[in-house]
Image 1 (cartoon, rainbow, N blue to C red):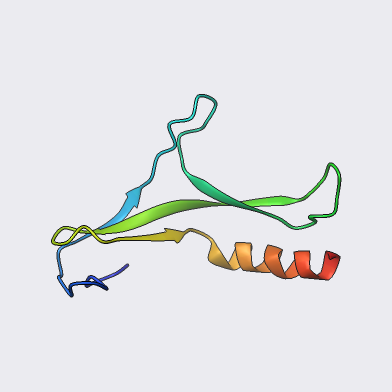
Image 2 (cartoon, helix red, strand yellow; image 1 turned 180 degrees about the vertical axis):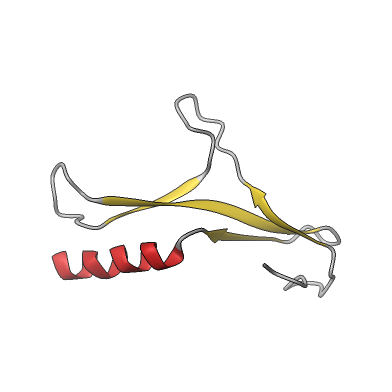
Length: 83
């Protein structure tokens, strides 16, 4: 969790705010996705990471972060091996 704002140094941080996707067929949570096997036609071995934000209550700066970054990193590394 961010304790002070990266832009204005305020300590008025609203942590871990859920970011919602309003798409018609969405499960409502905004996510990033990364294929472990980008060359595959059908089974790309996708891994997903939910996005959350820390928001500064002083200047409005938003810091977005993904959950499970270690899982995303491992899948990225695997994709390099498959390319």
